[in-house]
Length: 102
Image (tube, rainbow, N blue to C red; front, side, top):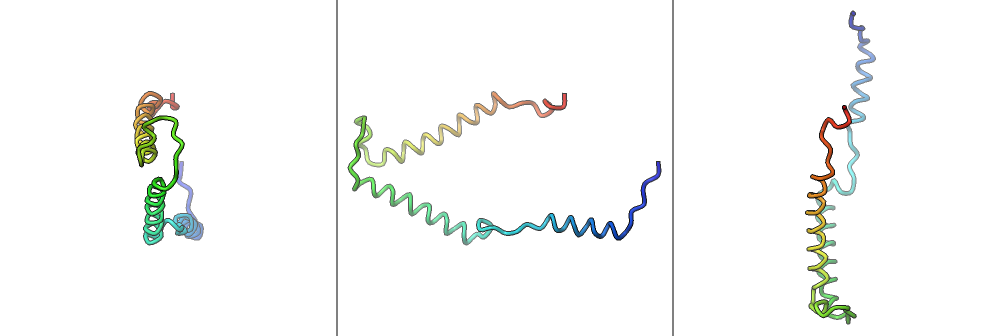
């Protein structure tokens, strides 16, 4: 079977279309200065929340909740535990690469 001849004008239009698809519009997070400002804002808010814990009277249900910064430490370790559990669950639930090809 013979290969179809390609019109050079069509080839140019295909290449231009490909370039138009490949161009990516920059967003707010693509600028490193904006990301740095966002991280600084995030870390400052974390520090403010931790400092505010010294001035707000908590109503803990358990005795260990009286420790200053307990909720921050508890939240951090809870997130780390969730990540490790997700990795273990991934090993259990993950299908083989060619599972749907069968």
